[in-house]
Amino acid sequence: MAALNPGKPTEPRGKRLSIQVVTWNVASAAPPLDLSDLLQLNKDNLNLDMYVIGLQEMNCGIMSLLSDTAFEDPWSSFFMDVLSPLSFVKVSSVRMQGLLLLFFAKHHHLPFVQILSTKSTPTGLFGYWGNKGGVNICMKLYGYYISIINCHLPPHMANNDQRLEHFDRILEMQNFEEQDIPNILDHDLILWFGDMNFRIEDFGLHFVRESIKNGCYSDLWEKDQLSIAKRHDPLLRQFQEGPLLFPPTYKFDKNSNNYDTSEKKRKPAWTDRILWRLKRQPQANPHNQRLPVPHFCLSLRSYVSHMMYCISDHKPVTSTFDLELKPLASVPPITLMPEGLWTMENDMLISYSLTPDFLSSPWDWIGLYKVGLRHINDYVSYVWVGDNQVSFSDGLIQVYFNTRDIPETEDQFLLCYYSNNLHSVVGISKPFKIQPSSFLAEDLLSEAQPHI
Image (cartoon, rainbow, N blue to C red):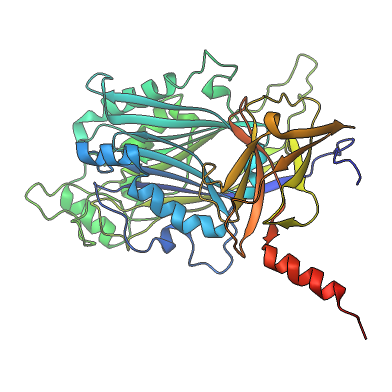
């Protein structure tokens, strides 16, 4: 068999990745029965590569938190159940009291996603309480640095300065001095979203509601606190946002599409927002020549609210982005595949090769997964590569895998190589089947029959 070394790398082609970003203050509610519209599952031409999902005000009572510590929380389980049959894997998550941030990717992207850090930044009670603040996942995606932040900022009309202060504090706390990771403002992309709680100033309740009823949003935009801050704050000005062409997403009576009819009659506002920031292009050098930069750009395909969901006093908001990039990493660190026909009754051989710059560890392992895995711990079985290696030659490494304890099934399987140093999947095989032993016996019997 020919070696699996990738050989001389070719110039990587550009890639287009479609990303769905979801933000929703769920007001302690359980997941509804159907989230097809929120996840675009009702579209015939669904062509998404990744989901970024941020929730605020999840149920964070003591009993709920204890249960969620021991088991998956209901929202994470729901999203995994819905997305795993579509080949999406939960790559990373971070939880701080009522804040939850989830990142899903199609399984073939896993070797090119390296989770570098997850962080929680509480800002409630002077930074000691996590009812407000932000949670962050920092990753390398095809070689580019990307940070995603889900936040919940202070409420009420009068607390605008406090919201801006918390925005700055969350950003300042996302530095990674203990690791070889650039400052967050040097990352190629920041996706920042959540219940930002910015309100509409000056206008009275009647004017705001009439404007919404008539679909006249332009006057309201001028008094939106976030839009005003973006015009004056140098840092916020660097963040982009799509047009607010949907009704304000707060505050509704629960189980209805009616704005607040309680005694407080809170004024509607666009509290739920999705922002992004691309790293600035390098400046011209003294010779008046621009430095070469890799191709990396983000375009907004849609920015909408979803009025059909009524479990909360907020409506969820989603953005769909197309990320175009020229991969800085186009070859997976590990190339692996099963050897020959896999059956349930014999130890089987796995061959793999690694790129010259990949640093392996004795604690690396190869997991066997059913196609449709929910997350990286969802393996059927695994082997430590250091304990089960049988040969090494010409850059090709072989290990044995015991299949005798694997239950017989017609499902397809994948192999994933997990790097202990990188805390990420760095290689994935093509799908294959493991034949039950009865199939192998039937094949041998058939071959033994005389052919007429």
